[in-house]
Length: 346
Image (cartoon, rainbow, N blue to C red; front, side):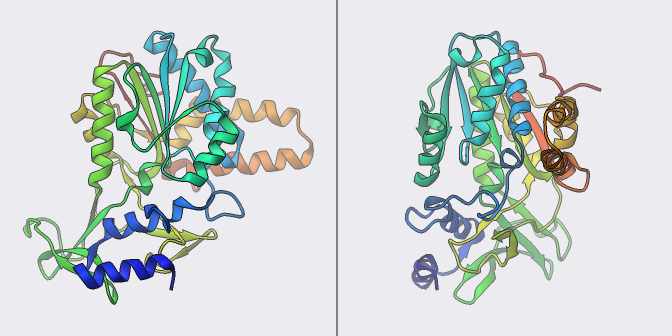
């Protein structure tokens, strides 16, 4: 039994079964025993790999996109460059290197990182140096903003509801593991066996970002795995040592995520006041930003082994059966800005 499992058991004994989102929130973010609070989960020796850790090209292309977005915003002499859930700081480091193609960008950028993990904050500081850390978006100062969120929203807990015998029930965790509790949903909706997911925290965060973009000029770029349209389905998953495990296995020792509903996210950005075009696949985004050309340049300067590694990385990032189509890319902008490339293009 993990220390967190004991704590969760005591809460359930005192208060009764807890909804899935509360359970996942404790598993990931408990101040002492939460998964993200005391470890570096990334890389081959961790539990999973993110795109910035697969290849530098990913961050470089995001950096070029940021430089162009800064130009579209009017090249403010000071702006907030924000990353939500910045991991080891790899993506931001690559963004800053690549954005040097735009004179004045680095000097104008004020780095703000939203990160709850003390362990990851330390790694970010070692890699990035001068930055300001935040527990939430709320404490980021006002002003023009470029915001990046790569594999951030998938880690925000979801509530799950399942329709059984013509009634909606909410999935929960009790003393005997997964179970159900009554739900206040319209029983006329959906079919028996349907599972729907709702992430109120995701909606709140997206709406808050939209409100900032309505008040101050800027853009937000969201990259995550998920679906373009709201649809029933159970997408909750736990990963440990690059293998799928049961969500209730060893609480606090696994990464727990779910697919992002990009349609719901877009509505929340719009409710906040931002303009949101249709999301595109990561494959389409990276190819439009010059993935193949950049890979060719790097490959021409590499030995045979490095070329093979690079080819595998490109295939993983943009392959149709790998991250390329599973991951989506969405932009939200201030309503009076032109839509940044490659969004809104034929």
